[in-house]
Length: 147
Image 1: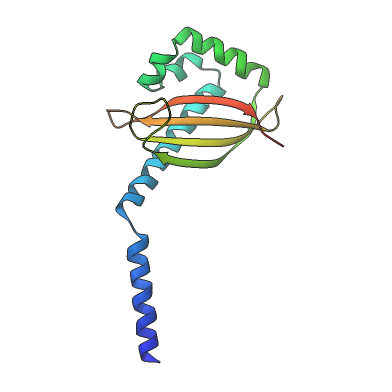
Image 2 (image 1 turned 120 degrees about the vertical axis):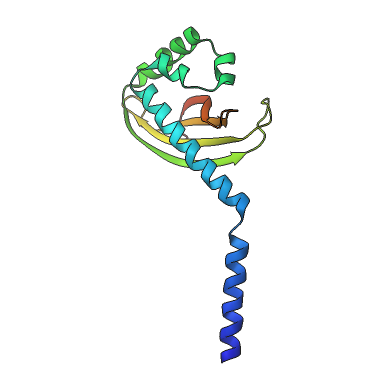
């Protein structure tokens, strides 16, 4: 009986050591910071602070979307939807490579969102880790959720 207890204790210890992986811990911390950045940025967009949301975005985003075009896109895309009724993080994933993007650290997120005029929507938000160590938005889109 004592041998079985020792074997089980050893197996539990090995499982804990194998489960704790510094790379996993770094990824988890990156995802937490990226989600916090996305949530703060979405609050700007929700409040209609289009210029501020552009200012808070990643350099890559600013390079690809001029400020005036960003404002027009949000006015055309978000205003007709009305206010956000609810938003839930459905998925997040840390990745090193994205199609047609420079190599780096990214966290891709999917939010299930309900707007007044679109009760079932999906918001895709992508953040990137910039050189200053800050997570910023580099991609955003909204689409109707599939039923």
